[in-house]
Image 1 (cartoon, chains in turn purple, yellow):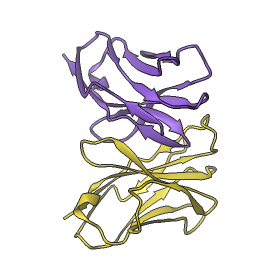
Image 2 (tube, chains in turn blue, purple; image 1 turned 90 degrees about the horizontal axis):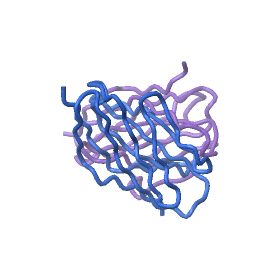
Image 3 (cartoon, rainbow over the protein chains, first blue to last red; image 1 turned 90 degrees about the vertical axis):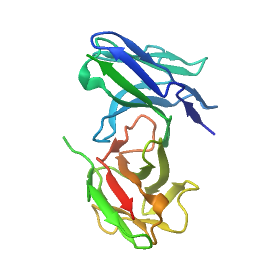
Image 4 (tube, each protein chain N blue to C red; image 1 turned 60 degrees about the vertical axis):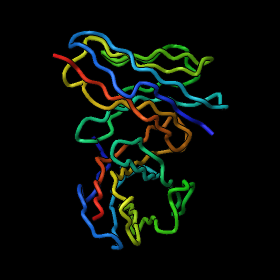
Length: 111
Length: 115
């Protein structure tokens, strides 16, 4: 069965600095999608970025980028120029029809 | 931009009561999902639904739960006799196709509180 592991329950970063959230996963599939979702206090699930497993190029979305290491089954999220609005719970997720989520990392932004 | 909607945003009920959570998926989507998030925990898959039947369900989705698409737009999750541990945020999601390429769009969630 597929699993997603986020080993950092909480992280803090100074405003305008860069932070990296870690994620590892386990699967026997070769083609799949990986996601990072943001969940602010409103608890809405907001898709931040996604990565197709067959693409070697790392996905980027403005200040958000990923470091996808397929062989290592690692999928980290880098947030550059952190802003106060980035404070939220971040979930790493794997798609196999249904979505399998990690336990999340709570990100604090320090002014 | 089309979006998934859910009603109510917050439901409070007494233990043992039945609740129905409603979702309106995006109109041209064919696959529907319910997920649950107990406060402070990760989001967990409950059930997927396609062509008017359940495609897959998790071990959480026991006989107390049922899903239905009563008309062309609504997708409901019913809990027959609520328990305290059913208190959670419930998210509906929909997608156009089963391929992992197709993004699942999440609704804003319904917060269920069982007293």
